[in-house]
Image: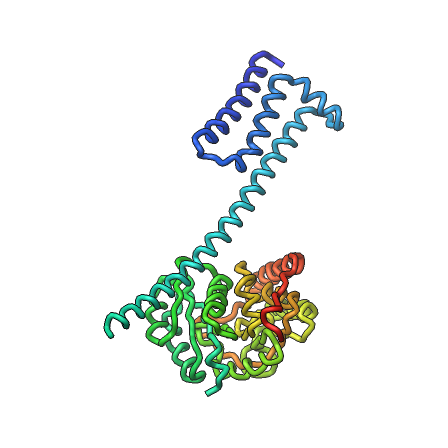
Length: 123
Length: 245
């Protein structure tokens, strides 16, 4: 591995972590949504700084080409992030739906109360 | 005038039904004197709300479209909050004949959920081809789940008794096909008694039922999935202590 590739790997990992941490700092990202990105960034940094770790891990679980382990873990992380987003979206939809139902019922109640108030002021 | 009608709320989910809704509401009041009628406007962009009010119905306005399930949830919650015992779901396009409602309410004395069924002998409503087969397959499975013979599980003409109203106000599903298929599964698993009653259906004011085989296959697929997941979900208990039967 050339020095350039090594530096490129480390810088990419640092950039990933930098973006996620900066978003967290600015409150543009909540911790619960950042967890998997942080995990991915830290893993990338470890593998970037110590490429030997990747070879060791690949040997350990019997992956012949270490790079394939990188792809596998990347896909796994993306999968987890997507699933998390889908469940969050479902929950948000359910919450909006309940708010919409409540809004409809409240509006009916307000209209009924307004009618009652008009009746009283007329009497 | 039937005293039971005063404790009954007719709920009509309506989405862009300005042409039909007023007539349907007027017909409900004419044939069912003393009943209360709530039109749930499901985010219509037309004149549905004004038309429903002209007919004399109560109107709940949803800020955006939630589908029949969401609209019915509003109906059940309104019924529960305002002390109605029974809820009858009637389509706002006029395909359900309100004169069947008293017979359905009568059945509620021994059941929790009465389904007005289209293929049970009465009326002239027919569906053919793959869509019909899809409906038959669904009916078989749902009949087994509900421990009763159901032939038309996708009918939107239903009467719910006090126990079902309480259950549905909390647990009525809002997903696609949830209002027909999953709601039956929820009721059956909460030990509600489900029966069906033959009713006549009228031709829909607009549109004809689709007989496209691809659409029928898609329908069967989505319906099977809805049924499968409904059966896989944990059953919800009915708080029977509050309403003894």
